Image (cartoon, rainbow, N blue to C red; front, side, top):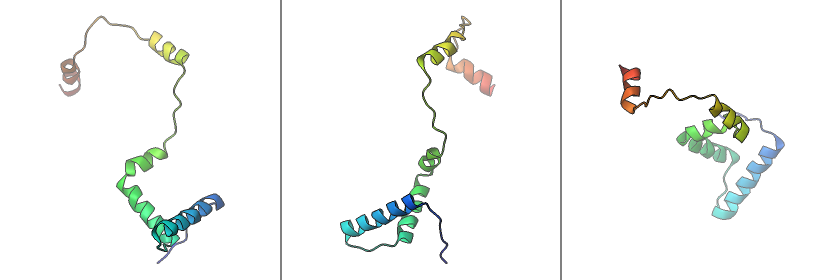
Length: 91
């Protein structure tokens, strides 16, 4: 059972170009449905990349913002080791 998928004109055009390119390169006719199925299959294999592509992009902070952040830090004069951290976290 096929279900329709709505897409904007630009996406539809790019899908058609991809379909034509596959035919030129392989000599095989593939449907847009086959292309979309293959794309979904590949996306499932690398879910983390797909999910990350929907995350809000973060622009690096300016040097002044970074400096302001570090200016607020103070040294306690105590050296903390990994064992100290493990003791606090895991008891």
